Image 1 (cartoon, rainbow, N blue to C red):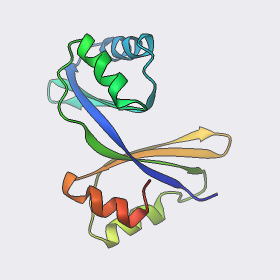
Image 2: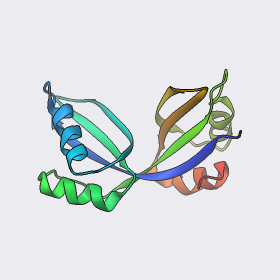
Image 3: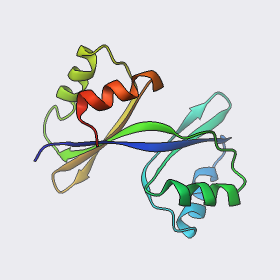
Length: 137
């Protein structure tokens, strides 16, 4: 089965870099019925950045507003799903490199049952070019 590549909206939220902040954010979203396609969090200076990729951006924005999170305009990321195999991302990354598109960040995981998933980001100016190149949905 071929890999599926699609674009999705993501929202970043900067929070204190303290234990329990992520758990609280994810609990609030769960309780609001918000489903996430992906979630990534990492330190940024003295704070942390959480990137949320909701399946329903409007439901996410409603929950975030209720939580009084300061959201910036959504940005675009890419989600990949496919059959796990050695070098699963090589062809995709080679295509992007060949088109001189820099991947600014990438996270990939084995999903079980012979599947993998990944999320990656490119500069906003390269989103359309990368989407066309990869045939993103």
